[in-house]
Image (cartoon, rainbow, N blue to C red; front, side):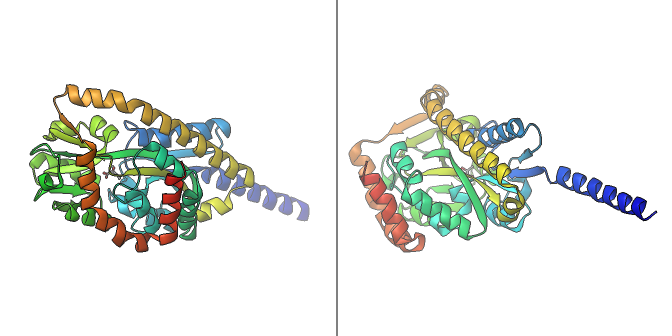
Length: 332
Ligand code: X2X
């Protein structure tokens, strides 16, 4: 009798723990852009690799369009920290309100090209950026990429900071962008990506800034954005990351699996994204968008006009981190 009861109790416990672990095997992954974009594809690749390598034991379910935070992309990091979201593939821009160090990547004209970006993410500065994320309760695993952000508008070709004067430009909700576009004489307006396209359609704003992949896939040309200036003023890397409590509950082998899959998905997506740029630009031109390529001198005028932003934001980001990034760039 006693033995039977004991057996029953054990069986119940076993069933409970099996169903608990089965339920705990699905995790939510937040992204801002869907798998029509490299960003969403990065998250899906992560999910596919994890599914395959765990033999179906771990499922990452991707929720695009910042839907887990009702479209408010700058709340994604907090939602992940509080456990409302298990994991995310997020942009440094969207997480920078909670992790000021991530504004590093938004400093105008700090990085000239992909080599500069890689020098930062793959070196000491990248390590410091990851430590800053970790300190705030999130475990960063790997880098991906949204891309170098270019400037578009519906009014006129932009070749000089003066051309931007008074133009209403939609920017993401990080205060640094407010400062950059104010320094350029524009009239910046913060709004989420969900609100950006309607605002461009109605003409509530004149312009926006996003990587070529976003301009191309979202068909930003169709909402009147006929002028595109290639100024490469900054690039936002993506970061694959996990809530700390979720991470701590995982067995070591699963952590390793998740981390390696994120690293592999990130590398895959960065390559995919970069190799598609030339064709995207060609397609954008073919749709009748007037593309402005700046001369070195014209480019330099934008660098000078935003110099004050580099200075005022360096202490907020951390002088040591900015210095590490600059030496990584210079050491190439
Ligand atoms: O909102 C944007 O511009 C986007 C999609 O690029 C980001 O989430 C940073």
